[in-house]
Length: 359
Image 1 (cartoon, rainbow, N blue to C red):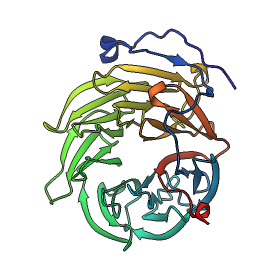
Image 2 (image 1 turned 120 degrees about the horizontal axis):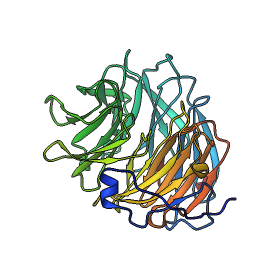
Image 3 (image 1 turned 180 degrees about the vertical axis):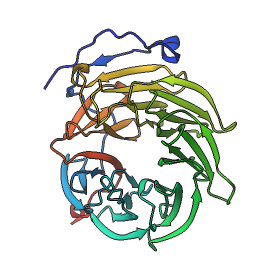
């Protein structure tokens, strides 16, 4: 195992450079033995793109307890209901093998309970549960709509157009009344969709390759990561306008925000070689708290899936086929969870353990 070390880093021009770093840090890849501050229990679900499956990791024992086949129309993302009972993944599909169903999973029993057919030209990618833990929304990438589904009755309840092109990621306002969707096509946009009525979506131009998406804990801002141009557009949810643009690493494509106000933004691409980093931002003043350089900052292929629970971040490194757990309060303190997974991508957390532990 490699040791951490500090090296100097010069801030890029633009918004980050003006604020400077707060305890800015770049460290070499490798995991410390430091304990993650938050005691972890429950189950981490991982969508494996190669072969099409979902892995279930028990966080108490740190063991993979089950691997559930989804099928050759492979999943990319995964969502878990707030009560931890249900999980959703989508038949997104490799290449032109485009799927049209959501897969409903009973987490405690690691079983598929059914599939929800979204119809042709759907290709579901990103999902989020509403606060009631029964209804969920999903992006239908090929039809530029989102669907509201019932995971118990296995039915589509409603659909809304996004007003964008190639809608990819979806997130909800804290009260579940609004859906936010990033669209990667054309100029790159964020769509704001009211789930309480049939009003037209509000479409906000961000920048090319709008993809990664996160909502601040109080719901006042949405962070949109524009992969093509390497920026983050910060959208005020009151005025529905971009109020600031922050520099990001080239190829940044995901974002998640913790309850404590820390935004984790990874960069990298499976299709090209680039220097890969995990960058941690302070959402209040937009400064960079720290960066983790993967493989000493040497260019290489690979992308990340990320999920935050509390101040703990789960990170799937597709190139290394591994998962690590990071303590955001003591970044980059981390622990290794798994290796040799079949192209791990989307992640979801449930507070429940598998039913086998209750027997």
